[in-house]
Amino acid sequence: MLKTINQSIRTGISFSSKGIVARTHATRFYSVKLTSSKYPALKRSEVFKQLNSDDLRYFESILTKAEILRPSDSENLSLYNEDWMRKYKGQSKLVLKPKSVEKISLILKYCNQEKLAVVPQGGNTDLVGGSVPVFDEIILSLNNLNKIREFDPLTGIFKCDAGVILENANTFLNKHDYMFPLDLGAKGSCQIGGCVSTNAGGLRLLRYGSLHGSVLGLEVVLPNGEIVSSMHSLRKDNTGYDLKQLFIGAEGTIGVVTGASILTAPNPKAVNVSFLALEDFDKILKLYGKAKSELCENLSAFEFMDKESMTLTDIHLKGELAFPLGENEHPFYILIEVSGSNKSHNDAKLESFLEGAMEEDLIIDGTIAQDETELQNLWKWRETVPESCLSQGGVYKYDVSLPLKDLYSLVDATNARLISKGLMSENPNDKDPNKPAIGATGYGHIGDGNLHLNIAVNEYTKEIEEALEPFVYEFVQSKKGSISAEHGLGLQKKNYVKYSRSPIEIQMMKDLKHHYDPNGIMNPYKYI
Ligand code: FAD
Ligand code: MLT
Ligand code: ZN
Image (cartoon, rainbow, N blue to C red):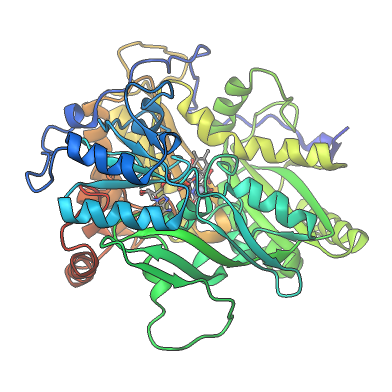
């Protein structure tokens, strides 16, 4: 049984005249349109060679059958050509899945000489169209480079191949009483190399910091095939430029990450989670300030979800899990996680914090997990939001940093914009099939000033995209935010980098790209 903090305060406040009434039957099983047909302005570069039989013969000479995937093979090539959102689709006819770093080096060296374009791919959970080809680029999958290399239980330094799946790395570390300092909803598929290449932030960044801090070293294959082995175990190393930082968040544009050395964290002995309802966004900010000052080093996550995102999640879970607070009737929800070394201390801190928050009228209702199953179930209401937003057909995703006071205003502004353009019903009960947008939802990482604005739609259309872009980016720029908090730029934000970076910064990025990848073979057509 979940323990409800304040049953009597459930007053059933009704929120938002434009709340989401999602379709109960998902319509997502349509065929994905080719990126090149959706964006005809994108043209295949004449610089790149078309794959021919000589190229295939070369790859067959250095790789085994199991390391090469072609359209005639039984494994479905579309798994590699289509992205997780079913928004982008490339036309690659070749997936290479090498089992060693040396083979990756040979592949890149050859591709560079022959001007064959390459897209590195990890778990293909990217949310900005970065992990799939646009045209016929060769897909270089890291799936087969998946060994844990070493672990030092004293320092917590963990070294692995880039293709190790995040959840597998964490399971390994848990056995040694350590944890990976990054956690995210895609952990069952995303790979360490993919996370490093997007600089993924995830659910506990406020406690464990970003990969720019916890990655101690990398092994990278440059586009010309050179292997840079810097799998350091040093926490301090000020020997000139910190070159590994270039590859953290580079999205596969200047090399392939093949290994990573990571500083992991001791596994907390006690973890607890509380799920709370709040009546307005201002109270979320007050609660966050209180959590920082009272829960201090024990605070390990402070996540928010709006009512709309919970409605979609409820529909997506189809009753599999009861809503933690009986009815989804409040405008905002917060998931707080505390973790530490002492259970009674941890629990006492959380309970006294929640009592204070109720006395100060910051929370309306809430519940605390009483055991591991309840804890996991509460997290499920947060971690399932991304796929729930997608489950109605499609989703336009914007992942932005904004000053906390402005964070939620973007969701309201977006709903107003879609209604004014006639793309979304003002009345949620009006299931007008001519309105392609279902509604905007907001959720994300309050502790990191990171909003996930998701617009659930029945289908991807030009009209919705034109209503949202550059509108969302202009809004973010006007508040001095970032158009990419944690997902990266990929193909989606290719034309919008200028909303967050100055001309000189963009030029420096181009210079770097040109220096390391003069033939431009690495992940072309994307943000650089
Ligand atoms: P891919 O998707 O395969 O690739 C991502 C990018 O990196 C691409 O540009 C690709 O070309 C490049 N790349 C991949 N591997 C390599 C390599 N070895 N060397 C060089 N380049 C490479 N992100 C967050 O930041 N926080 C979250 O909380 C979060 N939650 C998510 C939840 C869900 C359900 C999903 C689907 C995604 C989520 N993401 C989140 C997006 C996030 O970017 C990815 O999950 C993850 O970081 C990508 O890892 P991947 O192995 O799937 O990489
Ligand atoms: C999350 O925080 O859930 C992820 O970044 C994925 C998403 O934005 O949908
Ligand atoms: Zn996120």
